[in-house]
Amino acid sequence: MESDVEQRADAESIRHNLQAVNARIDAACRRCGRSRDSVRLLLATKTVPPERIRRAIEAGCTLIGENKVQEFQHKHAALADLAVERHFIGHLQSNKINDVLKYVTCIQSLDRLDHAEKLQARLQREGRRLDVLVQVNTSNEASKFGMAPEAVIGFVRDMTRFDCLTVRGLMTIGLLFSEGERARDCLRLLRTLFDRLKSEAIDRVTMDVLSMGMSLDYEQAIEEGSTLVRVGTAVFGKRPTPDGYFWSEKDR
Ligand SMILES: *Cc1c(COP(=O)(O)O)cnc(C)c1O
Image 1 (cartoon, rainbow, N blue to C red):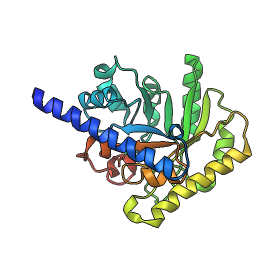
Image 2 (image 1 turned 60 degrees about the vertical axis):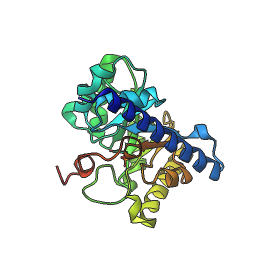
Image 3 (image 1 turned 90 degrees about the vertical axis):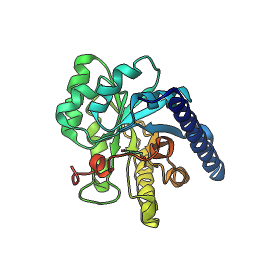
Image 4 (image 1 turned 30 degrees about the vertical axis):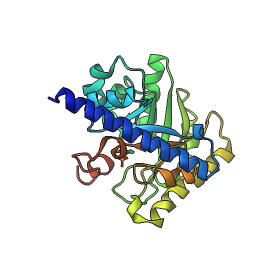
């Protein structure tokens, strides 16, 4: 259990980190002549306990994302009173599709048509719709989730037959900032695909969300056109679990 002093110190540090990230988003937008409200900040809350997520929401965060349906389940009751938008940003498993729909208004990680089919069937029964982003494997690593870049346009065209799903854009994890220009290439590739899809003006496809950029590269991502950056570490600190556990087939 945290003492009162520890709780206050943690709330203060989360508020401080959030302000710092927001200031850097402001500056990145200004540098490339974009309006501040063209970029949303999502807090990636995997492994973060609900009381810390609550502190971030009380400090002004309006959008959170989890990678595991189980984490939504475990944290739900503790956060149920808070108005915050929730997205799923992790690897989707077929047997969790009905459950994930209880918690989110957007799935950012769609990369399989059979999952879209299952989502559609369930949504139709519930009489509701859902926003989705298509996750793209821009780093061409066999172990990483997401679909191959060359398959994306065909996939989005196929998606139009699911009338309960609205494709709003694309998402990628890409390479880490430390990988230099190759990391930048991943951001550019996603942006290029996004622009191509926009110009195709596919019926019922909106294409207004480009989800890329994490703690180490959100400023670069904004320069490359990101409209939604997903930040965890820069606000909550380092996680105990290696990211490979969430991001790829190996390490599992
Ligand atoms: C964890 C995670 C993030 C945030 O990563 P940080 O480096 O902690 O900012 C963003 N997107 C996805 C899909 C994640 O799993």
